[in-house]
Length: 463
Ligand SMILES: [Zn+2]
Image (cartoon, rainbow, N blue to C red; front, side, top):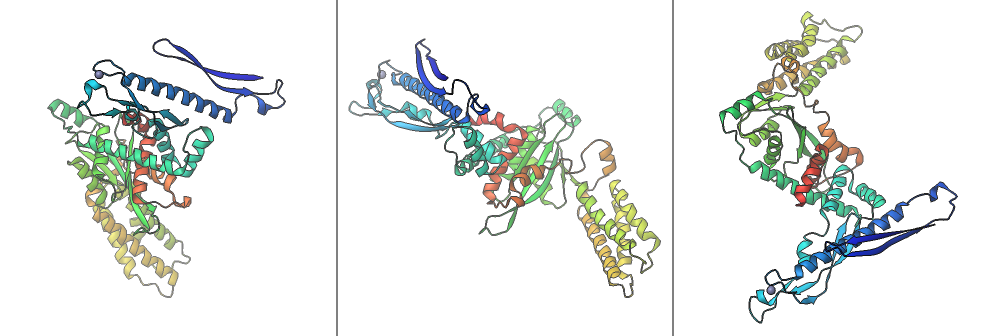
């Protein structure tokens, strides 16, 4: 049996032309399942031929249209015929790009000869925006090599190498970043009072920030560098992710500001920033908003440190026989820590920690090295937690109350932003090493892809 695929082209003038694309053959009566239906290789050929046929036809029509002088309607003389190559999802197509002598009526001087190449003006890039977008999306989702293999496996795309995936991903990242910078530069203050009141009523945007370490390429000054990842959440809006490598981002605060604006935040509105302690991350939020920021210490990170104290205490109590006299308050104090901090009683928590630490520091443990080490560790953990609390004083809240109000108290609720953005693509197990710039760019595309922003934005980017 044979199947022939013919393409019927109808121009806008009503002219019809038929082109034979491909013929597929199979035995008249098949003997195996594998002989039924279209094969991938055939499909690739078909798509490539269809693409070439459509694209060349369109480009030829475009050139013919622009050959006519717009001023006087005369055909401009042909100067020479050249070709241009365009990479597409369905193969590289060589198109004719004729050059025309500019019509006499528009020549700047009688003897001058100016030429135009309309096709070159149309083909502003070496590839179609769609190919660039698909390559960038794959490059953000998986390794450049795997992405290239996937494309090559399914489509007649060319070139299907990891270098082109990398460069397209980088190019798209630059476009995304530029779009964010532009959005961030727009003035969007809440002007009138009604709008202001409405804004105050609406739930406040919450920024959740966390850091992740990425292995640096050999030869880089440091072994690891930090990427800042986060989410902006607001009721009634789809979550928006963002990520950046501070040292190479052109305007780190602009990326966060664009994310906030996207969530309906307006200049002057307060923002809640949940992070894991340390002033750097809330400071980034402050520079993005230029206004009031309510910092909240991530409950998860605080809770982890409480757990360290609890664990050492449990270890100590489990020693048989207990080699020292544990004062009555010690165990109770440790048990209370979590609920004190949960309910915002930080001073009481610090007092309790102080009591345990001062006892543990001076406790006498005769001839029991294991017990002695445990007691000293308890003192150290308590001191650590206490200074963590004191350093983050302004960011400790009544977590219980906030949680009961249904508001986020932890970056871990922004479940796995770091995992999704960084670890799944730049994970240490993958043995990948990154330059800060390369990581930063992949993160821009990856955040957009995971948000679902990428496809919408791609249309604007391509325009
Ligand atoms: Zn003319």
